[in-house]
Amino acid sequence: MLSNEIIKSNDILVIHFPLDAKVIDVDKKIISSISTPENYNKTIILDFSNSRYIELASLVYIISLLTKRSRDNLETLIRLPKNKNVRDFMRSWNFPNATKEATGCYFKNIVTSDCHKYFGENPELVYQKYAGDTFFDRGTYLQLLKYYLPIATFYKSLQSFTSLLALDEANRWKGQVVTSILEKHLQGPQGYFSARIVFEAMMNAIRHPNANIIQTASHFESFPNNKITSSKKAKFLQSSLSTDPKKSKTGLFTIIWWDDGKSILDTLSDAIHKGENINLGTPPSLFTKYILQLEGTMGNKIGSPIQYDSTYIPDKESSKELLLLSAIFPGITCDVKGKKLITHPDLGKELPEKITDPLASSASYLTLPGMGLYLLVNTAVKIYKGEVAFRTKHFFMNIKNPPQKSDCDYSVKIRTYFDQIPFLGNMLTVRLPLV
Image 1 (cartoon, rainbow, N blue to C red):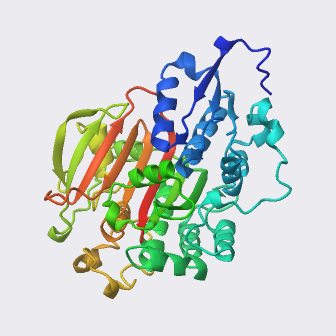
Image 2: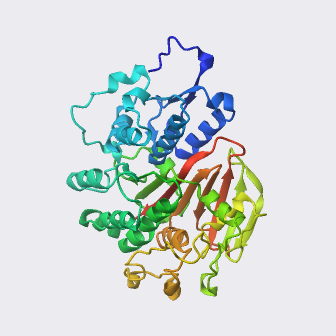
Image 3: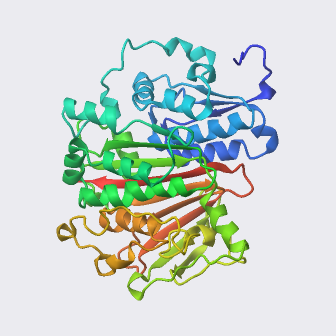
């Protein structure tokens, strides 16, 4: 256990986080602080003491960092928020146990000693309005909090990382309680969510080489004019989703997956450098255009947006940014022969009469290799009007609908953390507006 009294200040690095600890800001803060090997190798204190809001994605991000540094035999400590509502949110979402499951370290051993007074402050887990219950009655909310929202962990050593795990997880999101909520509040049928988002996200994580742990969590949050949302928090929630706020009258549903496997970027790159074919080829009906904006570490724009389309085939000379972009193209895969291809049995059968499905005319192609991430992005962005984000290695990629006047299908930004400490594994975040 770290003792602040006996360790010199130059042996530790304290990273202070803001009032609203959004994942994009947490990421930038950490990256800029540990940009050198000298700083990375110090004992690090992640100081959330002043934070009055911590985004769920920030908690998952921190678990990835703690896991990486634990494997590097480096000490990392957390200074907990002074705000009890935020501490209760962390408890309610199983953050202490999820941290132990990923790192093998007891949570009390990675919390600064001045925060030990918070342990045992609740005789039992209490019902917290902060956690986001504005849409539901208390009974419904408690069921969500018990079965769906907290961070869930899957181990390869205990559970086979196969399509059965992905199917079980998709089926979990077919439960009556959550189905009724998603059908009411999402801008599309619930069946698409389980078959095209949950299943494909889990299969994406399962397919990553060397993945030994997968974690997933979700969160419902309210927008302005809902009874418990402060103006500052509401402003953040609106800015978290770049779709038209007029179409997001109720709030935001976020679901996250993280795995500790090989980066999706390296998986494609290795296949290309081995001379393997990664392009299945797709019909004209799946032709897709993307407008790409590159960004620097602090979010500064690099050059002007450039348009690409799904006919682009990455090769050994392609930049890493274009390689990452191509991962969401239809037909791009390391398994063009489909030897490991598994699709959800409901794919193409999920209530298409309720919506205008842009892929309806190409339904026969959805079960071909290389369609998983394309299908996930299409469903989240085009059907549910949301956004998808990837964090892996030195990159962050966000995909959303383009401005109305654009003739492109997707607007993409890729932020590059040049020569920084790489992110461990792959983190996929889906944000969907609620109505």
